[in-house]
Length: 238
Image (cartoon, rainbow, N blue to C red; front, side, top):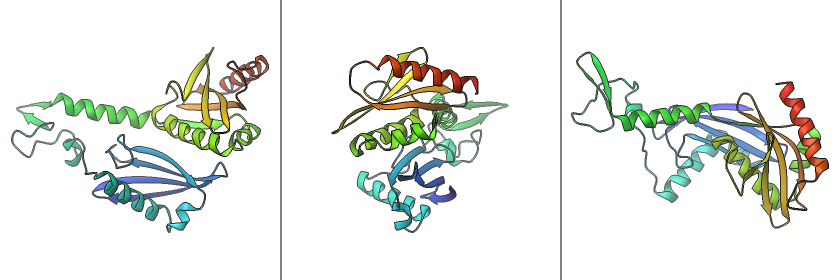
C-alpha cells in the first residue's frame, strides 16, 4: 500500500493506492483534507477500482489521480466549490468581506456563523468519520467472491465502492436486510445475480460471510445457517 499527498487546484488530497487489491484490480482511495468536493466525489471521499496495472501505466498514483481529476473536470466543466470557511484555515476566522454569505464572523465577544455553513461543515465531518471497511470471513470466501463471472464481479465491486463511501444501508437493488443482523449485496450481471451475505461489526466494518449465485428468491436454509454461525463467530471475536 502506498500513501501520497498532492495539491490539485488548491485542494489538498490524500491518496491511498493498493496495487492488485483482491489480487484482481488496482484500488485508489481519495480523501480531501477538509472534505472538499472533487470532480469525482461530492463528499471528499472516493474509493475506486480499476484494472490491475492501470496506475503504473500512468506513471504512478500521483500521475494517475492528477490525470483522472483533470479529465473529469474538463468533461463536466467542474469548478472548485466548497464552504468558504474552509479556505480561511480556521472556521472561526473573521469574514474578510463585509456581508459575505456562509462565513463565520466575530461580533463583540461572541462567535456567530451562518447556520448553512455550519451544517455543511458538520456533514463533511460526519462523512469523514463514517467511511466503511469491507473484509471477508476467510480466504475461501474471498476467492468465491472474487472469482464471480466478470459482469457480476464488476457490479459487486461498484457496490462495495458505494458501501465504503455511504455505508451498507444502500437499499435495493444494491443491498437488502435478511433479518437477525444479516444483510446481502445483490450484484447483477449478464451472467445472473450473486448474493453476498454480510454482517456489521464495530469500527465501521462489514464482513462478507459467504457468496453464491442466486438460484431462487430466498437464500437456502443451509446457507442461512452457515451465515448465522459465521456472524456469531466474528461478532464474538470483535
